[in-house]
Each structure stands twice: as structure tokens, then as C-alpha cells.
Image (cartoon, helix red, strand yellow):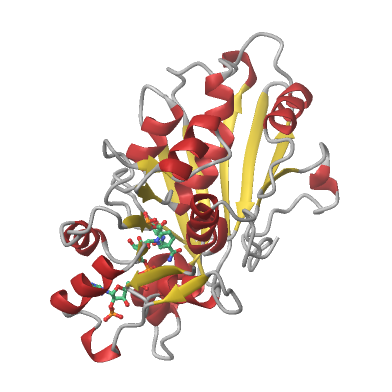
Amino acid sequence: MATKIFIDGSEGTTGLRIHERFSGRDDIELLPIDPEKRKDIEERKRLMNQSDITFLCLPDAAAKEAVGLVANDKVKIIDTSTAHRTQEGWAYGFPEISGAHRKNIMEGKRIAVPGCHATGFISLVYPIVREKILPADYPISAFSLTGYSGGGKKMIGEYEDKERTVEYDAPREYALSQKHKHLKEMKKVTGLLREPLFSPIVADYYSGMVVSVPLYGDFLKEGTTPEKLHGFLADFYEGQKFIKVMPFGSEDALKGMMAGNGCSGWDGLKIFVTGNEERMLLTAQFDNLGKGASGAAIQCLNIMLGCEEDKGLNL
Ligand SMILES: NC(=O)C1=CN([C@@H]2O[C@H](COP(=O)(O)OP(=O)(O)OC[C@H]3O[C@@H](n4cnc5c(N)ncnc54)[C@H](OP(=O)(O)O)[C@@H]3O)[C@@H](O)[C@H]2O)C=CC1
Ligand SMILES: CC(=O)N[C@@H](CCC(=O)OP(=O)(O)O)C(=O)O
């Protein structure tokens, strides 16, 4: 029997992408909402409680409100917003980082899909904190380059406005107050003792992102070299369908340049280790709309359903 799915927020950037990825799937029955009623609380409540699984593709406040509408115990929720990522009782939807995370997704009823910047950061930092290569008290920093679709419909509208002002032509740094909404999950999930200094930059291209974490070699576990760090990460992610640790020295093939849109349209995440023994750079390149949002949400669904993890996804 097909699994009944409701997408709350199906007209938004993430909701539309999730919807697209169901085309051709006969194991899913989508419960459509009348476009006129897509913000009608009673209609959303009705569909949510009829579903086996509801995707929330809403702003945080609306996602919190939506969870309160669930009256049927059997309904499972996959939330793409920031609202529940560090909340007790919610599984953090990042199956590659540990067996426990995968099990929680498989068995859980409440799944929070990781934030896009957080996905890159955690993919790089979680394994090396766990292995004590990176001390938990390291004063960490990270930067991130993202396409403008990361800001949802509003930001897409601003960038695609013919009357836009000249600042939009250039990359723009943001989160200047150092209070970005992903800091909490970056700290909690990795086990770091402090939130990172985090500087994201949004630029004039649609989708794709690059998250980088620079590390001083002499603060890492003794004897750590870029080659050893690379070997460790390659072993950690061996066999994972969605995470590929790229061969050591891959930056030569990229002519020393890491493009923000290099993985746009692809649902996996590539990891690069570069630098030298004094200063190393860990980089994750992926699509904010793929492994950074709707791709990761569908991956969680597939794990819950026990089907091929990459069903309906582009790897
Ligand atoms: N874009 C990205 O790369 C990523 C986004 N996310 C997260 O996913 C969630 C959705 O983001 P995104 O798709 O980008 O955002 P969008 O703004 O593109 O879409 C949000 C949708 O929710 C609708 N909506 C807002 N309030 C309500 C409500 N009360 N009831 C029903 N519908 C409502 C909006 O309606 P209307 O169309 O009228 O505005 C819109 O269609 C957010 O929490 C976001 O932070 C996560 C990872 C990456
Ligand atoms: C360009 C841009 O504004 N990007 C968003 C990230 C989108 C995202 O990941 O949002 P969630 O936390 O809801 O998952 C930002 O940095 O806030």
C-alpha cells in the first residue's frame, strides 16, 4: 500500500523540490491541498492527520504551530525548518555520521532535517571530534558560500528582481552579529564546547554551496597531517552513497578554485582536505537544495520506508 504523504508548504522552494522528486514513484500517494486553502489551518490539520508522513517546509514559527496540529499518533513528521533540530525527542536527520543517528531516523516519528550550512560543517567536524583528532574545546571557525535560493522565496525574489540594486551583483557577507540560526545545531551535534565563529556569504547564483573549516595543525592530535586527516575521513565515510571524500590533491584538478555551484543539482556531498601541516582546510561542496534540504529530507523518508536510500534522488 502506498504511503500517504502531505507536504505542508508545498508552494515554497523546499516544498516544490520535494514534490518534484516524487514524480514516477508508485510507493507514495500525495495528499494535495487546494491552493486556495494552503494556509487554512483546519485544512492543513485534516490532511496532516490523514497522512502517514507529513513534510513541513515552512518558516520556523509555522512549523512549530503545525506540530501542535497533529492529533493522530501514527503520523510521522519530517521538518525541514530550524524549529526542532536541537529539541529532545527529535531525531537529527544525518544518517551518515553514526549508526545511532541512522537508527533514530529509521525508528523515529519526529525527524529534523539538518540546516544547509550545518550539514557541511557537521560532515567535516563530527568525525574528527568523535575521534579526538580535534579537541572539543578548539576555538573553531567556519565560512560558507551559498547560492541565493538558500534564502527561500523572498531572497529569490530579491535576486531575480529586474529593479534590484547594485549590491546584489557582488557576494554579500551576512550573519554579522554572529547569531546565525545554525550555530546551536553545529555545537550540539558535533560535541564542540562552543559555537563556531561563522561567516556565511551569499552570492548571485541560484544554488550550491561550499562550507570550509580552517584548522591549525599544532592544535590537532599529535602527528595529524593533511594526508592522515584525509585518510581518516575517507575511512569514516567509506561505503556511504551520499558522501564522497575526494582523492587527496583534488584541488589541482579544480585549478585551485572551489566553485560554490560545483555540486548544484546533485544530491550528494563532496569532502576535500587541502592545506599543509601548519594550516589545513576541510571543505564540503554540495547543493543547499539537495543534501542541504529537500534531498536530505527525501533520504530520511527513504530510510524510514526501508527502501533504497537514494530512490528519487540524483547521485
Ligand atoms: N531554501 C533552502 O536552501 C533551505 C531551506 N530550509 C528551510 O526549509 C523551510 C522552508 O524554506 P523555503 O522553502 O526555502 O522557504 P520559502 O519561503 O520558499 O517557502 C515557505 C513556504 O511556506 C509557506 N507558508 C508560510 N507560512 C505558512 C503557514 N502558516 N501555513 C502554510 N504555509 C505557510 C509560504 O507561503 P507563501 O508562498 O505565501 O510565502 C511558502 O510557500 C524553512 O524553514 C527553511 O529555513 C532548509 C534548508 C535549506
Ligand atoms: C542564503 C540564506 O539566507 N541561507 C539561509 C540558510 C537556509 C537554511 O538552511 O535554512 P534552515 O536553517 O531553515 O534549514 C541562512 O543562512 O539563513
